[in-house]
Structures are given as C-alpha cells and as structure tokens.
Image (cartoon, helix red, strand yellow):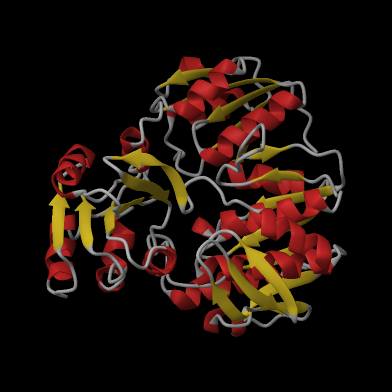
Amino acid sequence: MINAKNVHIIGIGGIGTSAVAKWWQDQGAKVSGSDMHTSKIIDDLDKRGIEVKIGHFVDNVPRDCDLAIYSGAVPTTNVERQMVAELGVLELSYSEFLGQLAKTKKTIAVSGTNGKSTTTAMIATILIEAGYDPTVILGTKVPGWPEENLRIGKGDWFVVEACEHMANMLNIKPDTAVITNIEEDHLDYYRDINHIRETFQTWVDCKETCSQMVINRDDPESQKLNIKYESKFGVDDRRVGADKQIFDVAGVEVELQIPGKFNAENAAAAFTASHLVGVRDEIAQKALAEFKGTWRRFEHVGVWHEADIYSDYAHHPSAVDGSLRAFREFFPDRRLVVVFEPHQHSRTHELFSEFVESFDEADLVIISEIYEVEGRTEEKFESSVDMVQKVSERNKFEAVLYAKDRTEAESHLRDIVQPNDVVVVMGAGPIDNLARKLAGQEL
C-alpha cells in the first residue's frame, strides 16, 4: 500500500472521496482538500480537523503533499491537478486508490447498474455480524456507523462499491465480485448495452480478478457473461407484509425490513456472496433481518404538513419504477406524491422513453429541471418540460407539474400536499436537500 504523510483530495465533498479522506486521517496522514461547494459532508470533515477550501485554486495544493486523490468528476484541466503534475506528486483517481487498498485485503467488490450501495452495505452488515470486522467504503451512509460512509475494521476483509461509470470498476481487482445487474446507463461514456456488458466481461476476465463471481440469474445481460467460477442469486416465493418482506434464497428463508423486489434481490446477492466467503446462513439471516437501510434509499426523513417525507436516490428508469412499486407495496391506500430531479442531460436523453413510463405507480408527479453534473460538459437535448408533457399524456395521474428549480418544486408541494400523503423526493443530485428542508433537518 502507498505510504503517504500529506494527502490532498480534489473533490473531497463526494460521498466516496470524503470516506477516503477520513481513512487517510485514521492512518495518521495530514489531509486537506477542495470542492466547489460547501455541504454537510464538508462541515463534518472540518469538524474532524480536515482543512477544506471552497473553489479550486493552485494555492490549495500543499507544497509538501506526497499524494493527491481526485474525484472522477474533476477533469485533467483542473488547476489543482495541473499543479500536482507540476510538483511531480503521485496522483490517483478515487477508483484507482480503492484498487490500491483492495490489493492489501481480501476484497469483495460490488458493481452493476442498480443496487450497488445497498448491496455493499448488506454484505458489510453480514460480515460484521459474522465477526470478520471488515473495512468498508461505499457511496452512501449507513445508520449506526460512526463514520457513516466508512468503516475501518481490524480484519483482513475489504468490502467496496465498484462504480461502473467510465469503467472505474476495472481499477479494482477483488477476490469476490458481485454484479447486481447490467442495464443501459452512463451513455455519455458507453456506446450501448453491448459496450457496457463487454466492459464487465473485461472485469471478470482479468487474471488478477475474481476467483468467485456472484451474478443475477434473472438479469438477461448478466447471463450473457462468460464466467468460469460463478454463483447465481435470485429471489423465490416473495411475500410482502405491512412492515416487512419474506422470501427464499437458495431454499433459505430471508426476512427484510425494507421494501421492494429490488431490495430482495440486493439481499439475495449479499446472502450469496457472504455464503461464498464462509458466513453461516443463520448469521446472514439475522443480519439481513436487522438491516434498516441506507441514506437516501427509501429513507424516511420526517413529517411535513402531516405527510411523510422520504428521500430516494433512484435516478435510472428501472430504479425509479422499482422504488415507486416498493412505495406502493408498503402504502397501498395512501396518495403517492413524487418529486423527481433528472440527473444528467445525456442519461435523460438516451433513456427518455423509459423515464416517461417509470412513474405509473405515483398519483401526482412534479419533475424539476435536469440537474447538470459539475465537471461534465454535456450537450443539452430535452428539458424537463418535455418529460412533463409526455408523462401527462399517459393520463394516469391527478397532475404532472414542471418545476424550474427546487424552490418552485417546494411551492408546488405547498399547494398540493395533504395530510397522510407519502411524498417521495427522488434523484441522485441535490434534490435531497429539498426533502431535508421539508423535514426540518439542518443542511
């Protein structure tokens, strides 16, 4: 593993990069960083004594820095990356650093289009229950973990989320790899579904990678992979109750507090991976039965005007559809109000028709303008106005409203929300701030 005493992180406010900052501080390194905007994540880093500068400037880079790590959203033209190169400092992307850490541990890495964060958290929860004491880095927060998005264990195991965007998972060479599913996404980088599947094939073909593979038996694209050592996961005989779901995984009954068939599939993947690395089935059962979910995944954040407010990270059409079906399963007799912020122009354009069909379980829909991801230059195609029009034409809703921004979305909610409604604020961008504002949480 790289030895570093002074680590600078460019784009430190990300959920993953902030976990890396805390990891390095725990190793005894002096850590600094920069980001374009302040946030609660950055406030938390500041409380830990990690100096974060807002804005990217040459002077942000310590002259005695011996390692720089950058977020995938930070381009090579960034002035701090240019200064790092000028100084001759070792530079790694976030995923490259994860790959370096993975070399020092027995590693389980989770990739796929949907469900990576939840599945990673589930595997970690099972391994903790089993006494494996893993180190964990993931792209969400886990309630009850002191560091939320990071767990530093004393054991030999590392559990990590391996993002497929820009083929970043290729930087991580695990002992056990989990692929949740393979769908069209990140089409600003990938040509099509074949290119995505071929990249996953490259991952599993690497001689240093994956003595064990866990794949979804019910996912058509995953089934096209040519894998020598594989275990398939799937969900059988699923039953949904008022506050839990019960299903079978390889003949073992599993109980889960969080709803949705997609979460049952996540749990099946976690159960299967844990079984492969030697965890007894009854320990996995217990850990999954007690698992309470993660940040921004079906997260109840509070009550507003006598309506329950949830934040959900879904930003791919199948994830939106799956999440809303889960909400409908758990709240069959309540009005479902959805606020959705599309994430990236390229994703919205390439999957536009699928998005239009993904809201059918809702009663009212508010669609905010498309969130433009910082650091990514994109051609602009449709506006959310176009999506509102097409969703309205399906004639399945009490109303479909456009919001030019989150302030206007809040205004719409004030006009339409009624007591006992379930309000789902959905998307991968800062739309989560709206949910927390409504719930009265400190931002």
